[in-house]
Amino acid sequence: MNWKKMIKRSSSIAIALLFILSNVFAHQPDQSYLYFKIYQDKIGGTVEMTTKDINEALGTTIDPSPYFKLQDEEIIKENLPQEWQQYAPQLKEYLLSRIQIKNGNQALQMQFTDLEILRLTKSVYIMYHFKLNPITEVPDNLSIDYNVLFDKNDIHRGLTIIAHNWKAGIINNESMSSLIFSPNNTSQVLSLTDSSMWQGFVALVKLGMWHIYIGIDHIFFLLALILPAVILKRNRADRLDIKPVETFSSALWYILKIVTLFTIAHSITLSLAALGYIQLESRIVESIIALSIGLAAFHNIYPLFSKSEGIITFLFGLFHGMGFASVLGEKGIEGEYLAISLFGFNIGVEIGQVLIVCAIFPILFFLRKKPIYKPILIYGSIFLIVASLYWFVERFFDVNFLLDDYISKAINKVFKIIGLK
Image 1 (cartoon, rainbow, N blue to C red):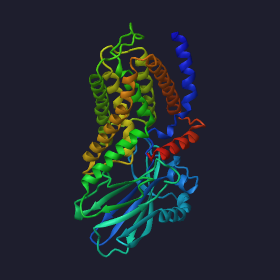
Image 2: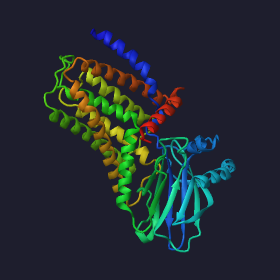
Image 3: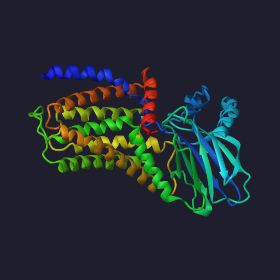
């Protein structure tokens, strides 16, 4: 097939398909929080939701933009703005209908008290404090039914965190989740007798895997790395001369090393961002992540580095790590469980990536000597380049294409059908 015709045809296909790309899935936390503070004879806590999620849940039109914190400002808590007070009764009623907490068979009442906001760069959390009644003695377990926003958003997750439990040795914890609620897992038991470090670690591993699966830009970057994994290294002179690898194990081992290098790179910047040592504007980070997909895909067609794809992988992995940082928390990750939370999340990301490789690589290996492989490599790479430019325009110029919301709902339905929700 003529090279120019191949590019023209693949570009047409890419443009036709690019509407499946929705910026809804690019590092949007889509998480609400249920914090508990356990004392000797009482239990309190806080429900935290973004104004975006509250608008979706209640049908309100709260505009958080006047309260976004400036780049150099500290993250602080403030009293609820006066103009938002009108939404308090509606929010209280919604939370009472969506969260039920029991001590054994005894239902506990959530007595909501004061409201605060947490101002972030691109979002504002509303924090609704509560007390549990009646509590005369702290139980060993709490049974929790949590169904916040799941009927509106299939990718939403509810994180339960024990912020304080002196008996269990937990002080000032805002980083280790004990439970993660999802649309198909709305009822769970929270242990109050120990710190549940293993349970929290497993929860963060699952969260890391989940954010790989809903992070379509990360999946596309991985796909750009996997596509050429079944052919021998090429240079610019022989870029169209595709020579398939002979052994399955060596090629698989190579791509797994590349993926692990990606994990190491994003783990570095994720940790530095979580610790507050580095901070870049989200728009810039997300734009660079978008471009990284296109560059990696362009390298498949016209090799940029003759020695190793590891250069591209590591360099852009650093920026992907800053993107992941928004998942764990512009809200602020701190406390003694920071290290185990970061470790668990990164392990989850790595597991998710390896599973994607194991699903795609055998198919490519089987096709590597067949005529169809070359078009897959070329068309697939050009599609990724077009997708990269699509995302870059959205993110850098802060625009939202009209079909995004419709495509988001369609992808949510796919998640529901396959059970990944």
